[in-house]
Image 1 (cartoon, helix red, strand yellow):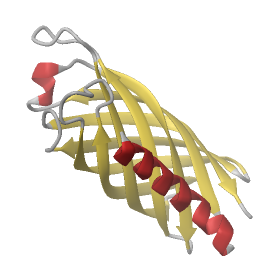
Image 2: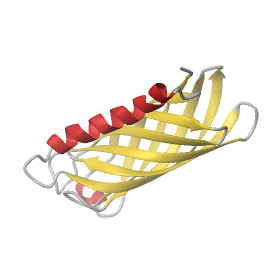
Image 3: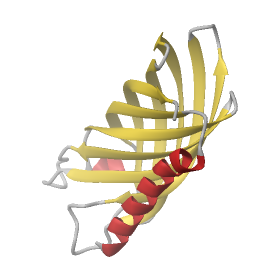
Image 4: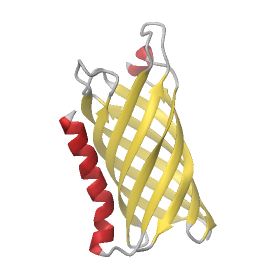
Length: 176
């Protein structure tokens, strides 16, 4: 539990660092998500739902450094009679390009800890990776709608966790 608190504190400091360093622009996002387990993980769980928050520090017009925290609850499967809660805490690098003046393409790749809070007595965390691709649509000068598809994989932890996800949400541009 101590390592989880330390990890969450580190992510919070990463999110606040650009404000302390005088960054030009940052983006905060709020998402809803659905996920389908694949591979070995599909035998132990069913479709998952949840949400998350993200923070991206923009570097120029195309790149970003970010952090994300998601919370996904995967449903019960016939072999396992309890739902599985997965909390990925990720750091990522992103790339953005414009398709039209109001529509953009986003790609992100990252890694971090996948935490399983329901399994305190067992190995309940492990390192994993994530890749995402999506589009964003400008709604106002400081708000965009974002739709992302992703794949996440964590070989460590209680069981090998892999799933395909779809996230939809709103991002808010913050200028300090």
